[in-house]
Amino acid sequence: MKYGIAIFPSKKIQDEANSYRKRYDPHYALIPPHITLKESFQADDDSIHEIVTELRQIANQTNPFPLSIHKVSSFSPVTNTIYLKVEPVEELMHLNKRLHQGSKIPDTQTYAYIPHITIAQKLSDDEYSDVFGSLKMRDFNMEETVDRFQLLYQLENGSWTVYETFRFGKE
Image 1 (cartoon, rainbow, N blue to C red):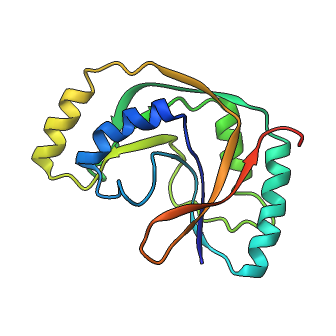
Image 2: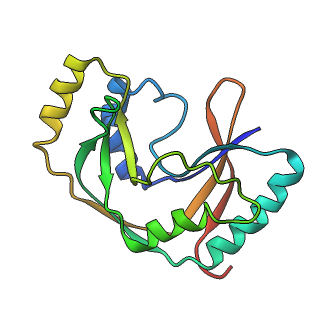
């Protein structure tokens, strides 16, 4: 089965992201707005239990941290993907690193980690230029504290659902 690890921000941030995703993200119906911590990976029923144990340990050793979003950015020219840029605070970057160094968790990192919430993807060049041009002039001042992450799994229809939630700090 295919799994992934992500942070779901507050409803306020999700609503803001969805105001763009409804129109510009073909994955809108498959998963709510999120910050990917670990790309998708394959695991069987036996290994997922070991992975859950390791994720619990990582969560217990992580303190809540600030999440700040102030602008949009893009992965252009590689792809026409536009995202809300999440400030790469030390705690978030350390959490990402720990999720790729676990003994049970498969290391599936393909690219350098750039924390973000996708709001538009698979746009034509003209549509990308229009949307990005208007959004990059806008200020986004969203801040909150993150205190958990989720292990997700992919259903047969391609959508993602939560397998388990891990709260930071000692439980």
